[in-house]
Length: 201
Image (cartoon, rainbow, N blue to C red):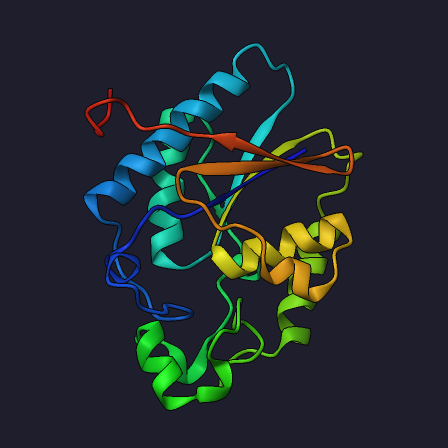
């Protein structure tokens, strides 16, 4: 079984900028989101006799999220894996969507620009590494894996798991206040609500 989560909100997320391979730290909201994911996973883990592990993209925002999640959920130290890093967005990185649309009119209205970004990672590369990671985490694996990844890489992982076509994959959601369980051929959204005051309980 796999629990797949996106990192919490970052400074660049809050500014509406493409991140890709550049990084920025979690905002206070992003930290609270990571804490909420950790609490929800702790609830799911309670009474589960299976062994759990946590793996993470090697990028800073994911590692920051994974460290918070692991501490709260009572998981071992996160294991970095470069196959979970975000899609490279090349020349789009650091730009807002209006800036991108102004420079590349052919991208206007396009959902999920991964694999389309000028100078960015190819779709074949992204799918190959996602497919390789999934192959090492089969349904028969007795371990429960928590994976902390990113918006586009997470979409591709779920799309491959479900056998979706590319356009359907591009339209998958990328929440930071919920995560997904991949099990028995299904992907289930699991809410990770913040406390009423928006802070750690």
